Length: 462
Image 1 (cartoon, one colour):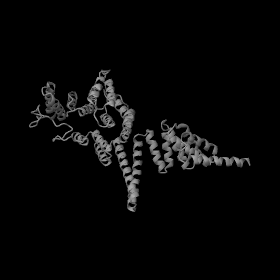
Image 2 (tube, rainbow, N blue to C red):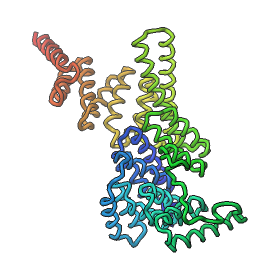
Image 3 (cartoon, rainbow, N blue to C red):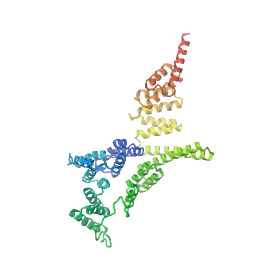
């Protein structure tokens, strides 16, 4: 069963948008939000995609602090696998549900891999099997499953290393010995020659292959080194470069993350989504550099330092525009990207262009109120006060709560006051006071409105 037969191009585009947004949330350490809203729908709706699978697990392990749970919880999750698991689709859903509570649950990882294999998604199966071995390198079932799957994709050295871990614990395991012979035979056929002079020809069942998380001297490799090892073995797998970049992002090492995304870009032939990840990382690096230079200038005011600060800030603003335009080009129906681009245009006083973006984005019910508010600001900037007031009023009616609700009421009140519509200004002011009387200079403005209103009424009477 292939995902290509069941997922339409439009659906695939939608999932890719979710994945990109999930990566953004993960970089902000909003792991639970990234999991529930973005990554879980991706893996459930496109189980064939190994990048979705790998990122789903990476995010979960960060959410739980990279600390493996106890064996007891793993066994408990494993028991759950017996329920409604005859169909691979059901088995996969149950496995994913279990992993959301414990991403180191070996039995759940193996079950997810088994389901993917039955569905014909071998690359995704390898991700889950590898994660199972990483969770427990001595787990017999995990090593067996991973070894067999690796053999299917002709990664014989890695497959043999898995079997070696089994034989280290169970030297007389006949299934493992038979699997070794099978792998060696397939390896020889695959290479078209006998592996003369290698350890594979005279396989030493008593020896131990170097574990994936250790070097030849037994030193435990860092996560970055483990990923680099995987990259060396399979340099065309972009998922490894992305995972490495995310490791550096977690450490706030933006320069190294940028290098990793650049490497991924070269391998992926400029895949649009990786271009987006690179641009976002470059934007973050420039923002951090701008803040650093600003603080340094405030401590040591110098013309040369100010010039560097201003130049870097300009680079940051340019990169922000470049990222926004890239996102809209490849995700034209994403209202969030349209809204963000509109804010950037508005900030740069490209008001007419910003209006077009906000008008497009407001068709999304989740963005309507925010867009109406910004449209009001745009029309006020070009002195279209009647249109501005209309949009502020609609924003007040649409927004339910939060800072933008208060902001809409405040701006509507101020504009009505400026237009000498004191009754309307007072009405908006009272609504805002009921929510937050301490908002900005609300108290003083209400007093001014009341005084001006009374003065106007007195003049009318006279």
